[in-house]
Image (cartoon, rainbow, N blue to C red):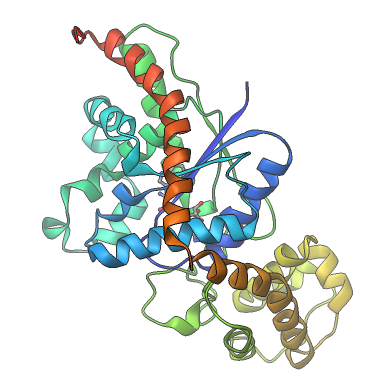
Length: 334
Ligand code: TYM
């Protein structure tokens, strides 16, 4: 049976990259009637320092963003990771399955640790084992993510395979990454060769789901581009990463292919294309932003939804954990 799991770190506000690369597609999967489990991974967030009050606020805000974007807590399971202890329990087991060498090759770790890896948390290194635990505690078969998470899903597959092999069982599924659509890698508005990220120091580099219409319009009009008009074929964007990024964003927002966008805007100057993109972005994002703001008026209700989601998540993950302890040889006598 198909079961989808995915997660987002509440380590900052949600960006257009998170929305197009992940959240929008989470909603599509839910609406296709697939069983969907979505998690705000607060335990992952603290692998780099988070101010406690801000973490709580950002977790609620992310939950509000999910619901505003169309996640229905009755149809999807929506919860925050720390409320379901199976995640960290399974992560420990996976810490004993995963190899140091595998973890050392993770590009996200290398990027985040930089040159000074002596001084990053041990949790940042072990991060992908917790991510594998998130997914496999639900025996999830498919994980929709942006391009940047592909390597982590491959590691999840390696961990599942090694666990199954080491213990001579056919227990964990070999999970498939689902990386699809026109915006699997949304780039910075200031540099089309860099990923749009909530941790980029420049706020101009990204669109936040909390930005108002005016700010969105300004950021898009100021986005870096070259001086050429749009080509009449997608191949013409090969060496134009900034232009390509705006076309991809347009395509993803409009549910079109990049080819169809180019067909419509062939020969157009950015003076025409950018305002069209800004209008489209505002039309798609503003309803989400205003619903998010409305939901944030009632934090207790958000917490209630997360608690209820956690109960339902726990009902799936707890029996899986019981079986894991049994497979591994742990005495369970209470
Ligand atoms: P995170 O919080 O960095 O991002 C959440 C999701 O958004 C996608 N994404 C993007 N997609 C396209 N363009 C971008 N610029 C962009 N930026 C982010 C990410 O690919 C991701 O799908 N390790 C994960 C969180 C996680 C997780 C999991 C994901 C923890 N456990 C289990 C899936 C399954 C992360 O840091 O995502």
